Length: 195
Image (tube, rainbow, N blue to C red; front, side, top):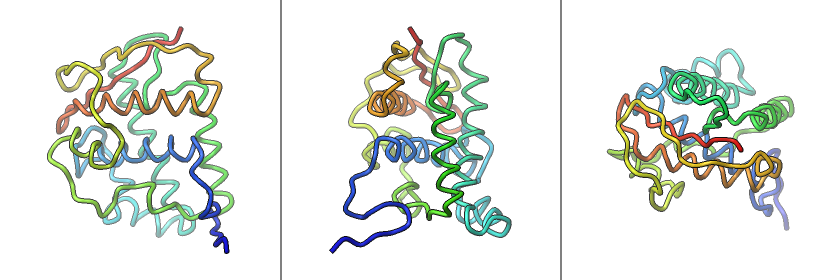
């Protein structure tokens, strides 16, 4: 027997876009004001912005909070990354429009956000690296440490890689790993140069 929920069939494995959204949601949650403070938002916090959004947008508040957190993270990345042909975790160029459409579709259908989308209820770890490892988002960091509050070039990627969902997932995983070097109030923003 297959039990169905409004989000997707329980028997289905997550799509690459499900995993892309989950990774970005975890990093956005970690960077909120009450945690590592990389961006000034608490839109994903159940006792903060999410509670306020629930009163305004009862059916879609968690998705709206996700969009707010992603936008705040993108603003910080924009401030730190000064490279003309760069993509970063929350500034994925043409992929951003696809991700926003993905979220809008779930809001329109009033799909509940899966519990696995956010790490709420999990024990907070002392470092970003520890949190990302505990959540299974990284095994190890592939990048050399850099000072907090900076961006660093983590490599390069061809535009053609961003055409496929699996290619985007690989890029997102690489970019998320770079956040392991971040400290409280000092994000380390990895970016890839587009070729």
